[in-house]
Image (tube, rainbow, N blue to C red; front, side, top):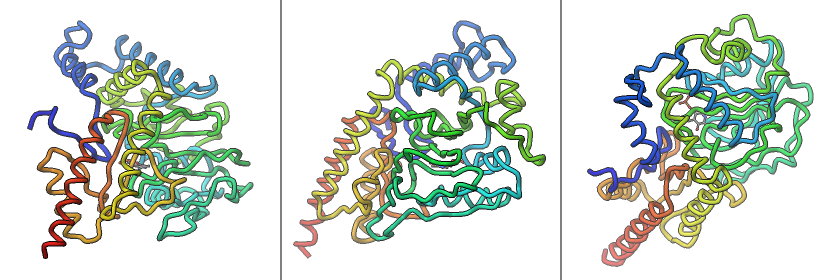
Amino acid sequence: MHRSNVINFSAGPAALPTAVLERCQADILNWQGTGVSALEMGHRTDEFAEMADKIRENTAKLLDMPPQYEVLFLPGGASMQAAAVPMNLCQAADHAQYMISGHWSRKAADVASSYVDVKKKDIILDAQKITVLPTSEWSFDPHARYCHITNNETISGIRLETPSSCPVPLVADMSSCLMSAPIDVSAYQLIYACAQKNLGPSGVTMVIVDTHSLPEAQKITPPVINYALQSAQNSLVNTPPVFPIYVCGLMFEWIIEQGGLRVMQTRNAEKSALLYDFIDDSRLYQNHITKAARSPMNVTFTLPAEDLTHAFVQEATSAGMLGLRGHRAQGGIRVSLYNAIEKTQVERLLNFMQDFEIKQRAASIGS
Ligand SMILES: *Cc1c(COP(=O)(O)O)cnc(C)c1O
């Protein structure tokens, strides 16, 4: 199939803008006239240093980042940060609070429990019609070393608001929402996000951390995930994922060219509203999350029977719409609408969904 006929709705690694990929294509043979491929670029070269500085600068600009924060590029995905956070922010005898809103927050808490005493707090009020406790009603533990939240639960499609105040340092897994809308960085001590959702390809994780308030890391912390050390060495403690970092850089330039994070937010809100409104009007498709907690990034829905879900995925795939099968832990359908997905692509999906529904109705009348 030709690229222009395919829409990649995958949750990650996710779609990248064609304009970004075309630049990669040229740079893979000859990066900016150096005669060296972007895949061969040395991490100790002046060119890499210059590029990394530019990416840090663009990150700060896009996120309106206060000066005490630093951007780190680390290996190991978001999953590695689930361990790195407790290792760097507290000692094993301390305790930390984890707000549990779904799969990824639970997983982060489970991983962290090897390195800190984890106190979990469930913030889902009703699991059937998924309702999230509003942040204004969260009870924070003032003695915790930090409180960990997952702003966008990628698997179920739940969005959390940033709490307006928190008595302890707030740590956020923003893997599937960073750079999709403006955020208030100063509300957090630390933000981490793997790249393969809104930022670029898999292989690098961005950590944005207030380095002025970092305590001493636990002795067992490996150097590559030691924030203070990585900060002191410009994320070059070992060979960093050079190519994924480079692609993130192109992606940030693309976001700036498009008009920045407010434009991303408006587009993402429009795309998801189209889909949620359609689902709410449909008799075949159902979303189970209360409106206030619905994610603009990952829209989930179910069909009334497993064989229908299967047929939906198969027919969508034949029509060039890929990555729609829900996560294996949840089932159903999931449509991921990250920055690179265009409104016209969502409209194409809606046409397909409408045709599929009409066909089902006709079949059920006929039988
Ligand atoms: C994708 C994702 C992860 C896992 O990321 P890896 O890079 O595979 O470790 C963790 N948290 C959230 C919210 C995610 O969306």
